[in-house]
Amino acid sequence: MAEKTEPAAEAAGDAMVDEVVERLLDKADASGAALLGEGGLLTEITKAVLERALEAEMSEHLGYERGDRAGHGSGNSRNGTSPKTVLTDAGTVTLAVPRDRNGDFEPRLVPKNARRLAGFNDRILSLYTRGMSVRDIRSHLAQIYGVEVSPDLISKVTDAIVDELVAWQSRPLDAVWPIIYIDALWVKIRSGSVTSKPVYLAVGVDMDGRKDVLGLWVGAEGEGATTWMSVLSELRNRGIEDVCIVVCDGLKGLPDTVTATWPKATVQTCVIHLTRASLRLSSVRDHPKLVPALKAIYTAPTEQAAEQALDVFAASELGERYPAIVRTWRSAWPEFTPYLAFPPAIRMVVYSTNMVESMNARLRKATRNRGHFPSEQAALKVLYLAVREQINPKARDANHVAAHWKEALNQFSLFFEDRLSIQ
Image (cartoon, rainbow, N blue to C red; front, side, top):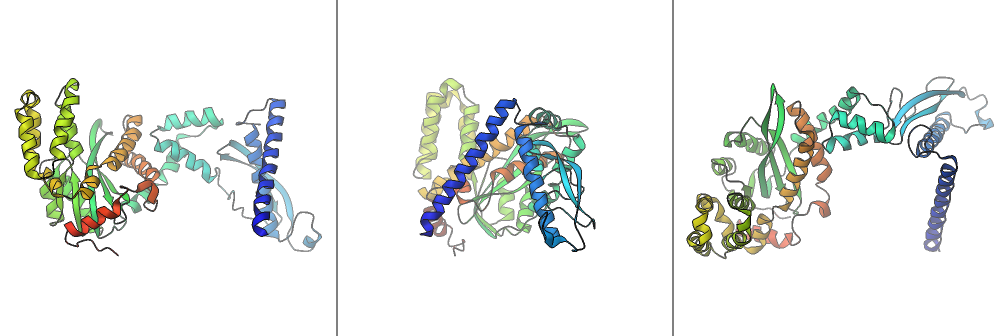
């Protein structure tokens, strides 16, 4: 019986909400009131809800409702209200905050000295995450909510995540990872003059097939294996003892850096990087022919077959037209060929770098919108917020790498001689 009444009660509640909304909208239409800003519909609703919640807090604090005779002789009672202006998602709202005679009422919803609700801070961080500058955020809030916000306030809100960033950057990590992708993206940072600096990025795939960004590091001008050594050493110090496959670009000296950190790791040059490097060396009109020729190399069943496919390409008209492409693949051959020894389930996961590419695209969008950053910390704040928004290590649906991860994990266990402790 309870099962039948519960949906009925829920439907009645929804109908009541719809009726209230309709009345409010009719009232707004009749009076010509705006939704947001001073006197706006949502602003007035926000004010009413907050004041009612504050009144409920006061009743809880005193132990009796307004007008209840139980409060007579209780030693404390209501003592009017005091005005307080706060910033909310609906704009600036002036509240009548209740007071008690003893002066010891501490509102939880709108704490003393607080001038903005938590949701308003989240709104600022959301805009900051999307790469908007302080000036852009001020303009947006003024235009949409009719709120004037100082640059200092925006800086304080965004600086509040610095401690969280530091804790995230130094958090302990799992001992064993099936795959770690390492890459660098470039951002413009002012240091005397505006220069492009690499931000080193490490993305791991854990035992459940979920992705997680392991860290972000700003380097000096120019990507180098020396800085990568420092980054990988930090990851090892944070608990990573072994990695099965480290996927990276073709940076000189990087494979030796990886194996110096994790001696058993297989270093794999990213197939997508190789393909894109090849396309950059060729005319767009030749791409329809070039892509199948390259695909014949990286989808070959064995290393010998791949080498034959590369020889065929080198001897073809395309290969003779673009000898630099042939040289690119031959120079990367030692780090490319481990891919050819992997079983299909592992190949599918290693080749499919969409998870890293989508992350890089999101980070590049956040940094591109800003043009350049005033400091390294400012760049890291924006990048971390973008990572935090996109990555939730516990969200399987959002962060899962492959539909057939269990099959790949079984192949990992066999191929890498049970280095993975599967519980």
